[in-house]
Amino acid sequence: MQFKILLNRVHPVKRFVYEKVQLVEKSGQPNGLGLEVHIRPRRGSRGLCGGCGEPGPGYDRLEERRFAFVPVWGIAVTMIYAMRRINCRGCGKIQVERVPWAEGKRPITRAYECFLATWAKRMSWSEVGSAFWVSWECVFRSVKTVVDYGLAHRDLTGITAIGVDEVAYAKGHRYATLVYQLDGHSRRLLHVVEGRTARSLLTFFRMLKKSGIDARKSIRFVCSDMWKAYLKVIKKKLPDALHILDRYHIVATLNKALDEVRADEARQLKLDGWSILKRSRWLLLRRRENLSGKQRYRLRNILQWDLRTVRAYLLKESLNALWEYKSPTYAGRCLDAWCRQVMRSRLEPMKKVARSLRNHRELILNWFRARKQYNSGVVEGMNALVKLRFRKAFGFRTFDAIEVALYHQLGNLPEPEITHRFC
Ligand SMILES: [Zn+2]
Image (cartoon, rainbow, N blue to C red):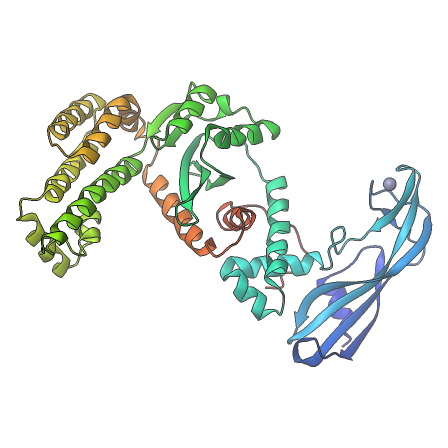
């Protein structure tokens, strides 16, 4: 069987024909071999203008160009074609033709880009690069092509619940704003942008508007943390939606305050030659049911002492009862009582949290008002997933790469249609 028959089956090119296939010895190629596939236009077919896509009379031909294709048996496959130039009447000038297997000036076929991007979902970009003898940049560009296609073709109708979140990266010196869809039928990342200012979040609403979506009509629930810039934008852009301060974010803020108290006290105790709080961080932050027997024993040991950390820990734990309430009214009373207690505690980081919970009382109680329609575990799930991807993406040099990686992994984007699944 000829290689050409296979090619026509897995990768047919309309208006063109595979002319000949050659096996060449090449030192720069993997295994020292390369397959070169020459392409020519089908007889009588006119080239399509690269500008407007209309067929037009030929003008001349450019030098041969090479397009990388999916390798077989560890042999690099290259398609070779000399592009025609079209004297396009519609555009009023001479244009290079459009070919079905590659985009613009890219030296790689669409099929190969999809192939690399599919692998890049399963393993790291550098692993994909070394598995297929391509550069990291090539993998990045391939994923970006697929992501760009997905973003241009995704369906943004029917979004009723969103979550807004910030993530720190680059050792906590920089922030990104993330918006997810939290609907039961579709949970995905909708938007990533650098920074965590009001302007960052506004880009999300601008994007929706550009896609013809009326955010105010469509979105019924918004869930966020207590970051002021977000609160302001949400109030302005979604005045009719129920804004919820999610349990997950409140617990995270409390944990942060507790950790501040602990770090401070541990430092002082160390100066006095005490090590009771040494390596206690995760014991105190993790949920008690997730601790091992030995860890529980250590925690119990710590809790015997009269420490500021212990008092902060007990305050944090006592707020757990809040989430059991069904009625917003009773939950409100519980929250008020908790805040009063904390305000008397003389633990400054905890008091700061209590103050801000007081300020956002109504938004917190919205959690109880919405709990039937909206599942708050989703926020935590998405957040954990993003943090995981982010850690993986840390090695990326630019925000561009982080952005592309996150959309690729979490955006649930439609993929370009290809005739054959190569992997
Ligand atoms: Zn044209």
